[in-house]
Amino acid sequence: MPSNNEISSTEKLLSMIRSDDAKSGDFSGVSITSSPTERRGSVWTRLNRILPSKNPVTIGVDISSVELRLIKVIRQSSGRKWQLLDQKCVPFPPHISKDSHQFVAFLRSSLAAFCNHSKGIKIWTVMSSSNVEVRYVQIPKVGKKEIANAVYWTVKKEFSFNEEENIFDFDVQGEVVVKGVNKIAVTAYIAPKKEVEKIKTLFSKTGFALSGITIAPFAIQNLFRTGWLQTIDQTTASLYIGYDRSHIDIFSKGSLVLARSIKAGINSMIESIAEGIIDRKKKISLEMDKEIKSSTADISEAKFYDMELSQELLVSLGAGTSFRTEKETGFHLKEEEIFNMILPSVNRLIRQVENTFEHYTSIFEGSTVKNICISSGIPFYTPMIDHIEEHLGFKTNVIDVLDSGKVPFLGTVIPPTSVSKRSTFGVAVGLSLSDNNYTPNLIFTQQDEEKETKITRINRGIFSTFLIIMAVCLGVSWWVGNSVDQKKAVITRLKQQIEQYSPLVNQKLLLQMATTAKNNQQNLKTSSQKLFPIVIISELSNLTPMNIRLLSITADFGSHVKKSTKTQEKHLLVNGIVSGDPMIREASLVKYIKRLERLPIFITPEVQKKKPESYSVEDDVLHFILKLKLV
Image (cartoon, rainbow, N blue to C red; front, side, top):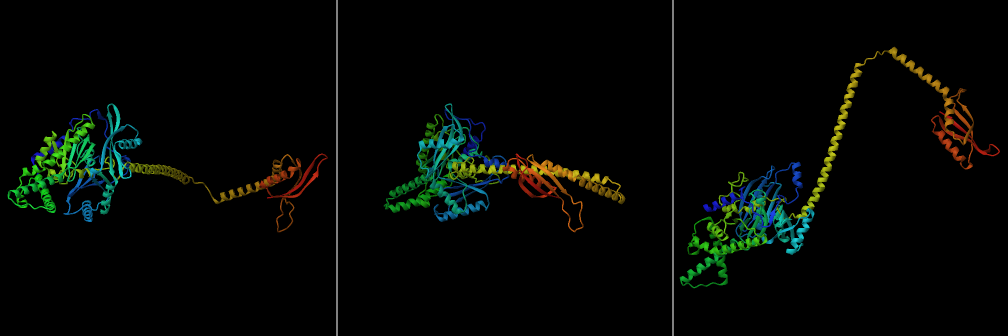
């Protein structure tokens, strides 16, 4: 169980982090005017406001040296609210390698049990920050499309890297003012493609596809950016003591400005305890005048045995358990003696932290670290925390991301009772809060985002066109429906008028109307027969051009019909001449005949005679006779 001092330190840290009255602290000569809350474009965020979507669930997977830490978080639809769904810590099976098939099976079964066969879950994991080069740079204020190029060449001047072997990407933090000049603050990072592909391959073998890969500093940054831990104005450092390596990260207003991996951690402390045990054994052997026979193999075997025992001692040191080591080692170790064994490793870690703070102060002139929070992969030992505080010169607090009294997003999940155990979930919780909008993703870089943005823009254009077409169709449908309603109203009104109208109609009246209509029709027929010759002459006069002269018109209307079964045809014989240019006389006659064909009273004109003749002494004409059948 953690001591009262440890709990008090945690409460003070979280109280300070969540305080709304915290004093602001800026870089000397650098004032941040705006800080981003989202790194990527918000196209899908705006689309989700229009189209309903299921609340996304994200799982953070932190694979440490000895155990697997899993955190499941759901993002609520209302605002930036989160809820912890589940947490789990699964120790590795004994004597298992991360490169073995047994580890793949272990990871598969652990994820399957934790995911509970749920669909649509996003999985984020972390890779070692020691393999990633992180650089904080400031570029001139340029357009959005020019930021990538400016960051690339700025980093390229300071750090040479091969684009084919490494992944290059960046995180825009916001605008800063440096000595009165507006600039853009950017955190750039370079990661080896082989390491990223190795992690992707590991998860693909388990059957669980990864949504993102990031590093621990960016996972801790998520805690501030998402509001899981309240952002503080003062510069804060986060120290994580891992097994193989530790990393110190410095944040300004919740954004990462410096990250450093330190080759010192829990394994160094375990080795120090193992060396102390071996030295203690040698001293006891010398005091008892026993002959020491140690080959290289014997020392290696003894050291391996002592490493396992040393790890148990280090864990029990932080857990506050009793130190009964006489049966295993042949002598008894006191708590102070074990702490003195790890003290050189702790001092080396403190010196590296101090060097990091000095380096930060040299980069940002006059700016110093005001707070430090610490987390580790093993339970904390209070005297070690006090020792670190004494050398650094300010309070060191244990970060607790699963404190039910301070974090409002835990829901009904019961976290571990130990503060030290809860602090080991810091990276896993940060991973579960990851999102491409604000978390650097090693498998979804800026170039991938640009491609997706283009695709999204095309899809949005298609969707907008579809909406316009649908609106037009709805408008037309409304107009047609309105017209139908109006016509139905007219029909109804006419039916009502017909029903109201009742004419006096009988058989006698109908016979009289039929007789009148028949007489009118007969009169019209008689009149038309009388006027038919006049109509013919009028039509011929209108159609005859100036160069054609009609000499005579003979009409046969069949008035003297002999008794026969056949009807005698009615026709006209038109006798005329065509004058003018001899070259166009034929054409003029043909054109005249075509005009006559268009008249509905004539049927197929026939040329009975067409011959050039002398009409006068000075002029020749084309004499013709046409036979025009009448209807």
